[in-house]
Amino acid sequence: MPTMCPPANPEGAGRDSAEGVSIIRFSTIRASLAAGLALGLGLYAGIVRADDPKVVHVAGVLYDGVESAWEKSFVDSFARVIAQHPHGVQIVFEYTEHVSYDQAEQVIRDYADTGKYDIIFTDSSYSDAVEKIHGEYPNTMFVFSGAGNHAVGGNGYWVTQHQNETGYLMGMIAGLMTKTDTVGVVGSFPGDETNAEVNGFFDGARAANPKVKRKLAYIQSWYDPQKSSSATSALASAGADYILELAPAFEACQAAKVGCFGNYVDLNSLAPDVVVTSSLAIWEPTINYIIDQWWNHATAKAAYNAPREPVWFGLDHGGTDLAPYHGWDAKLSDAVKASVADAKAKIMSGDKVLPANFANPVAD
Image 1 (cartoon, rainbow, N blue to C red):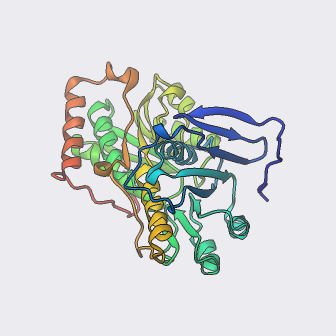
Image 2 (tube, helix red, strand yellow):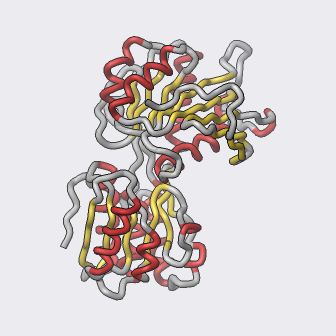
């Protein structure tokens, strides 16, 4: 069972900072983010009245640890939103890592029972757990994220991240750069988000190079470096010389001397010689949307009324982007970079529409 409460003065607690926000990570699997910022750093939205709330307490429930790119993108985005002080409020964010699906209902209920938290924000497929308990806490906002969820309504909000647009752009790079006319993807589990990005990657590669052959391997895990490494090596042996790593294994990319793409956060620093770029999961628009819904509930006394479809933000609304090319900027031709930049501009302007394709990807 995940540890729910760190000791008052935990030994081995680590402290560093991100975007001017104090981050405390305990030697247990619980961590805390406290704003601790001067008011002058805040970007205030609207007029703040004397009786408006000054603090919002958010509890995070994470499926994995922040060593996973998905979790890191979530926590890093929260740190940036905290620094902005939306609506002029201080956001106090605490989270628990490594919460399995079997544990989720109890962990979420434990947070809700304290009466302390305005928002319980989970980053995985916990809609079943939320559905069982959300009606008992009508003034608490519950959020669940990603594929494998279903709409709950009321105070249960479904948000997600789709990387199909940036997947398409990375696929274009792969299709233009490949010398073997073969590209690959190492996936985690098949599911809506994964399928959308894989299909986007393959579509972009085929759009840039109709001769491209597609190779695909799922490791059936969100995070298993050994399985990822084996899958990467197998795809490279099958001829793929550019591989999208949804479950990263960059040492295998280095050993095979193939180009790779990262996911959710900028992973170039892990292997600068092989990581061309990464698709970024930028949660700020989603987090701000959730804070806005809470603010409306808290100030206008409006009942929560979650949409019956997942809320997500694409490239045009800042929900995703490509990481910088770093050292690969000199390796990519001007023509390749111009083609990708042109496609990105058309996506952002609405001239090029790339619907998320959730169907199971087809490999050759």
